[in-house]
Image 1 (tube, rainbow, N blue to C red):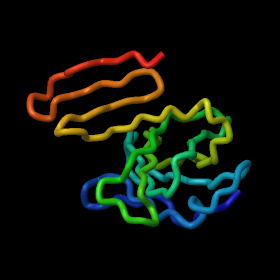
Image 2: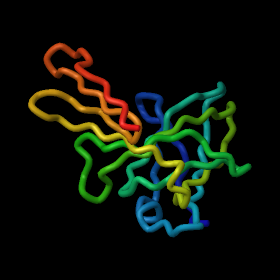
Image 3: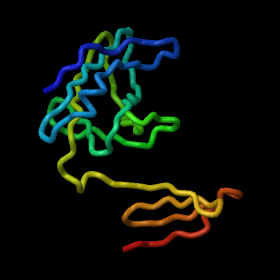
Image 4: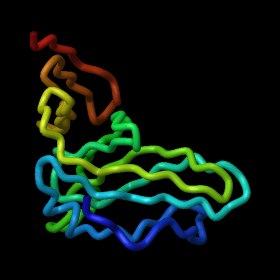
Length: 149
């Protein structure tokens, strides 16, 4: 396991701010993981969304029992070239407590469900391996839904 030194601190907006060794995430090898220790310094339970800047889409989050925590990799709006994606997941932290999660390289491609969003002629097309949905950028209405199977 790669270890990260800094854990949760609370900023002005009361949302978690993680100082993550992004280099460890960028260079994560298959079968290895980066350990994140998330700390709640408040006297009440916190439910927060953690957003990590990453440079790849094959990462998943696991708890200490090796259960997969639902997560999402999305294109970072205004992202830079070294971390063009965001890995997001939610955590529930006990009062004055902590939780440990693991960022792992996903070796099982079937777990990854890719959705692409593109703009063509002013319309927005959202598609994955099952559906293609055309949405009008003017009205916001669905123009068509195509079953790709």
